[in-house]
Length: 152
Image: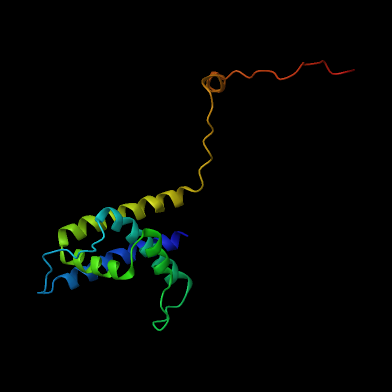
């Protein structure tokens, strides 16, 4: 699992760099598309897309003739269409400041997930009353039964 996140850490900056080069074209869109996905919704979508792409690239040999159908499940999960995603990516990549801020959030979320994964499973937190907490913190052990002397 660690190599998965190492791959993601290397993949995301390369992807951002590619978007940067494509965004330097002369044709810029001043008005956002009508179906633009808002940044608050785009960040979790991009996190899921990058995790899916990294997972696929680690588990399979990429086949350019075979489409990645998992994206469509992600789009459905987030309530957007593939066309909406493509037009939003095109617009955001032409708006470098917004695109950089958005990808900073994506990278932060991926880093948080990586840290959680590296920490391992956390024990469940029990809802204890104040009395239970006081007993545990006092250091005293309460006997649970009657102590008897051993038979000789």
